[in-house]
Image (tube, rainbow, N blue to C red):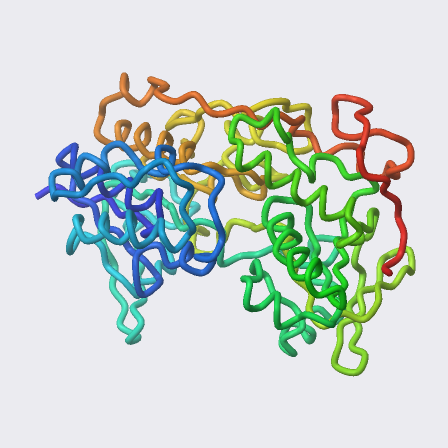
Length: 439
């Protein structure tokens, strides 16, 4: 009997992998650490996606669901919760017992071979070590492993060095720091106080917009948005040039919140320590600047891949992004990268460990701006490779929408008033920015 292919994670890409494997006659075992399908997505269920339903459904998954009587929702933009309820949960149900919950993968290796052993390595099956919620452990033999575990459980810290800031751990334990986007109820509870948002990506912009809506009707709420870089870069996105209209609108709304005086934008702020003052958090930058004591700090500085359970797998990862080396050059925010990232497949996701692939947001390592469409194409190609269909694995079946902005982060130490934004040279800013303190 042929061994199964183990898929780590029952999120959008993990479940899609299960559907593609089943369609090709390969037996998937999908292992999910959470209690239900799409557990990570459910954590940000109140957030609206900027992709429409047409870009949130995988092809093989749709074929499996349609056979069970499912119909794709319309062209509206769902929330994370709606994505789970109307797509991910039904998909997991269609896959049935192939999906196992509360099953955390704590190790992957070659059977009888640790990382250092060459002899006979490729011919050995994988061993996937699983720890269940009740404490029971098991090891599953597999012909291939697809890691679609994502990065949600590994948020980046507030500290400017990539390490937690001094005092960050204590502030987090005290409930002053949060790594998720506030919902409307949480934002309203903060009215009358001071809130700090750290980060320059879509999550930070979404948080700023949610908080600004409350500040507009309850002027007592003060919001500071702190960026590490000395310039705004592409924090406001591509606006009308973005081929995903809702993604472009997100940046424009965040920019408007700053222009309307609802949000103070502080640039060049690299958090060195977080002090406690009367039950509030005081962020102190490397240059000595302090923000007004905050009732809550939303640390939305990105995510990192969890590689702790892959120590016995031979990986080829970029030293900066922790993404597969062949993919890293396409997604590296440090380099000139205008427009969209091209679709990638098994060739770019391959590692020295034959039959092992990292897909989904985790495949981007520390790089931002991952789209569900990208992951679905990755999964299609990877499963084709595992099935031995090399022609299908090499074929590209996706054209990604353009972001409308330069993907480069800009020159790290250039201050906002020197007028450089992104790696494509000067761009006019509609909002006057500066390394100024809070209101």
